[in-house]
Image: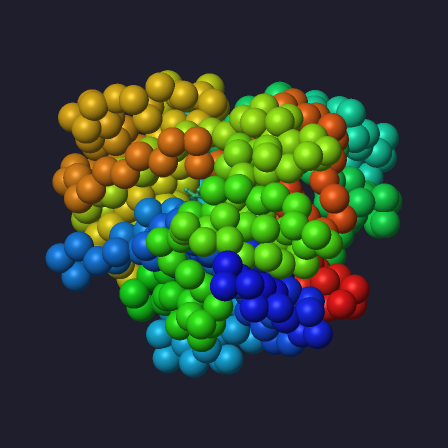
Length: 435
Ligand SMILES: Cc1cc2nc3c(=O)[nH]c(=O)nc-3n(C[C@H](O)[C@H](O)[C@H](O)COP(=O)(O)OP(=O)(O)OC[C@H]3O[C@@H](n4cnc5c(N)ncnc54)[C@H](O)[C@@H]3O)c2cc1C
């Protein structure tokens, strides 16, 4: 690595410039440093974590982004390495998860006993779902909605799969091509010959899904601890404005200075990556701007609801704007806090509504579903925050970049924490092997 002072460092290990200190950039920083590579990470914000942001209001923890992570092996290893074990909060994975359908909450079948007991599916719907192994395999060019409905039946799709799967992205699965949104599922089906069989195997064997977790002060404790461990390499308040070729390497303009590195990993949003990379001669990056992101609004409510559970998702045809609600109260014992999600493709205008409208909507709809009044604690708007994985993802196939520049982050593979850590590890392994 060399900097604007011109100091040459040609006999040093491969140098990597990482753009962004969200969870992907920080995990990557950690794994690169662990493998002995020379890493420099630039973050435009004043705090580490990107989308992962927690705060305390009157002693109550609010999560402005993700509400929970899963204690996958990568995260568990970090909890110990970063000395976070005492702060770890583990939720009970047996808590019920609900879908609001036909005027009330109904339990999502997550075990064999709830499969038989739940009234979210009729007996006919349950029998239809069991026929899945006899259906034709999913196709990459099929939309997620038609794939799920064809394989599991329309009722299971409408009542269970759409609210959970579509709710995750704020998207309509009818607009989500399987090749972009379900690539892992398609690969699983190819390996196992069915989607239902591996799910049932998992239910019978039990105990394989790592539990949901957070930390006493919220999820941001994890990126903060990663930042503390690597603060020599991570530069906050430092925006990378452009990347250009510089001899055999790449020059990053970052916070008023230039740093030359051998490899670059960009973990910003797709359009952010296009802006940084557009000054490069040769590569095609403009299509990155075509990828759609959905906007969300989070309304934090305080209520005395007394219902145990993870929370609920709302079936798409219900006359509610709420897409889902997390019961932070019963998940992590967060004193009466409930997080309401509004927006996504079913209500794209939510992010532009006034505070008053959003507060009224969230409170009234919470009252309709839960039967209790709630007070609004805070409202946060998240414009274009979540990759839609819709038909616009075809544009990704036309992006071309030199081998030394890697795009990472949630729009390039899986959205959740486990996917973020696994992608970071894969990239670090590859760069270490090449160095
Ligand atoms: C509302 C919401 C709820 C979610 N819930 C869950 C959940 O419950 N469980 C779960 O596992 N996952 C959840 N996810 C998904 C998960 O939180 C995200 O996919 C993940 O945190 C994204 O991390 P990232 O590092 O890839 O991106 P980001 O967090 O967006 O980080 C990118 C970083 O790059 C920085 N940056 C951008 N441009 C530049 C530049 N030019 N120079 C320097 N820095 C730059 C940004 O400031 C940002 O900090 C949720 C996501 C959202 C939005």
